[in-house]
Image 1 (cartoon, rainbow, N blue to C red):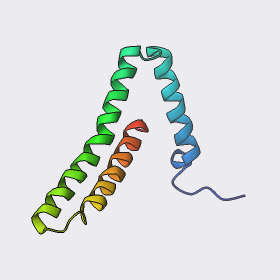
Image 2 (cartoon, rainbow, N blue to C red; image 1 turned 180 degrees about the vertical axis):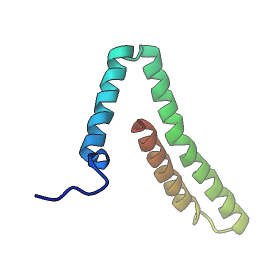
Image 3 (cartoon, rainbow, N blue to C red; image 1 turned 60 degrees about the horizontal axis):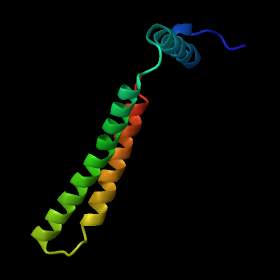
Amino acid sequence: MKPETSNGPEEDPLIAETRLRRDRRDKWLREGDMSVGRRLAQIGVLGWIFVTPTLAGLFFGRWLDGYLGSGIFWTAPFMVLGLCLGGWTAWNWMNAP
């Protein structure tokens, strides 16, 4: 058996996840399911969180290409960068506690 350290069982990831799950379940029991309007609003916000950085990257890439006269050299990388940033932001927003 592994001897206990001075950190104690409070820092065990399993205990932390169990507490988080219990807190989420308690909140669900108190508040119930989300309304249809709130779910639609959440989907709309998620869309904007995803689309806005993608379009910003696209527009910045087009501007940079126009400024440098490089055709479409910077458009695709900045669009992909915006797409990745939007996906990462949406993922974090959906998985926030």
